[in-house]
Length: 303
Image (cartoon, rainbow, N blue to C red; front, side):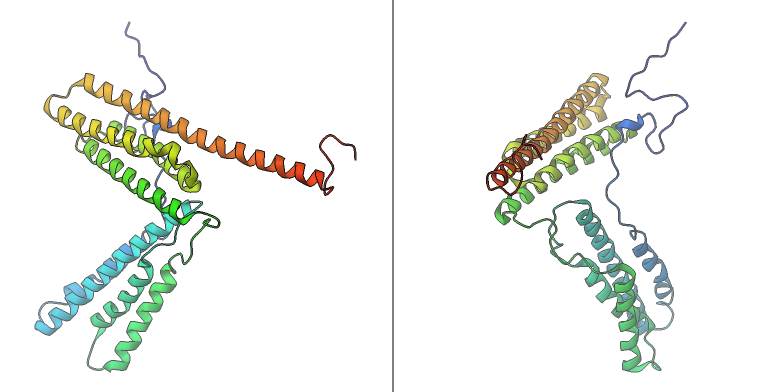
């Protein structure tokens, strides 16, 4: 009689995983941070479609005005969406710099002229057009809020070290993006999910180093050399799979991802535990100092 074999990472009958068929739920990556208002910019573009429909049939001036209004509102929606993404990433991190470009504010500023251009009519006049622009600006600011205006958790952090970390993280993100794009060419949901899980473990290391830039030396090889090797292996595997679908090569690549993820997870855990040990030592030294100064009772002394 045939017998089904399965393991931790094998698909379980009767328990399909939405979006990733054949992938065990515990191997799915954590979802990327998403702002609660992320869907609103799309509604702005949808609401601007009447300007696009009214652009034709009333002469070149109306064509230019309505197309310009639609394009301006579309650009405003794009900036607002990117600003929401940046804010979600800022909220998800313990330490983060404020966005260099206030995208939500710029999007709100563009929303006003876009509405004013689309609503422009002779009876409005310049004052009425200005009021419409001001209403659009106010709606953008009220509906989406302001961009983060200050750094978070950066007190006492060496700016030079933080900049070094930011450059290494940016390089690591480029390697991850290239790896994900290479695997996406295969169009295999299971392998895509496996790659995303590895990317999530790598980003966990990124966040740990961002929280403590002093750990960069211990983690730099992982964030550059190892990720570059994973990228190169992914590109070569994708090319090979497109040619002959070599199952041996696929198994070797998945084994590589398993090993890399285990090493990245272990390194992240070691950095976090090292930080806790350092904090415990500092607390113990401070406790001894306070006991010597008579501020608190010495350890082991009676009440």
